Figure 1 (cartoon, rainbow, N blue to C red):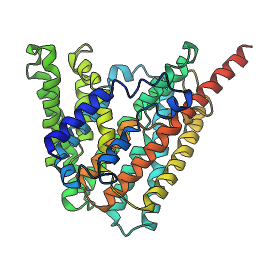
Figure 2 (cartoon, helix red, strand yellow; figure 1 turned 90 degrees about the vertical axis):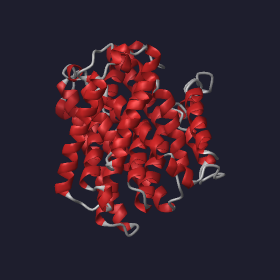
Figure 3 (cartoon, helix red, strand yellow; figure 1 turned 120 degrees about the vertical axis):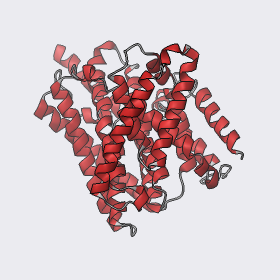
Figure 4 (cartoon, rainbow, N blue to C red; figure 1 turned 180 degrees about the horizontal axis):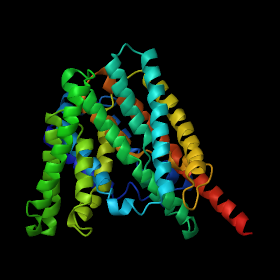
Length: 406
């Protein structure tokens, strides 16, 4: 299939699909919850790609690397834009400490488990093992605020405080995870075959920050006030394309660079700047495009990927649940959280897939294909069960609240 048509089909599927993928109110509750976040679009990509009819072969997918990097930059920018210092200062200190604690505990647990399983599996180099374990752990440490927002719409206002606290945790644990991904890319530079190099890593990290600040400055001051509202999206896409191109050229993480740009812009632009409206308006289409691309990029990686994904998913289930329960008792966030609140953070969302895609296109090879397969399988599993677990947490919290009032 011609490359131009592939791009047209992907964008059409994303923008048209966003009108229907999340409108499932008429479905039975079981099916609605099971397919709540639109993860089934991954299978569209699988049917079109190497795992299906191979209509879009591996060669064409390699030519789509710039488009993939653009999507990654979008994901990093949109999450970075939510990190406004003034808003973070309003977050309860106990809840902030809980967020960092559960994210760090989950990351450590998944990193150790993935490292051990990698050593027991194929003969990868030590650098590949550490880098791959870091990427899987980062993808598993985050939670999806989108799924929580969608589930909150099914509940009365009395459940709003619970969902608000869970949403805060799910939003804030993204930043540290993407920083971890950025450190992996700097410390294990792809240009040297992933060999651990702390000196070069420090240099790359310095230039990553410098590039991000420079890019944010360019976007902030290049004269956007003269633009018409309809021109804002074109400018934003061009900016993201340039940013992602710089990242690919230097073999850095587009996610990490865009995150830092987003944080800078969030704290320098006015709250009513048109870029916020434009960026968030494209969230659903880009999310669906990323799901389709995940299916297209997915290549067979053998039974080891299924075994590792199941083991990592179970470890994540335990780590999230246990760390939130312990953290709630240690840090006592305002308003509190139920003992099983960690189960409400099981959804991973598009960002986990973006982390896997990021690793795959910058570090091509057997190790990255295995890591990507593990992350994709883990995300599908968690997206299926997460709505039911969130409903369980919310229903139990509501029942306990009513019992206390009675």
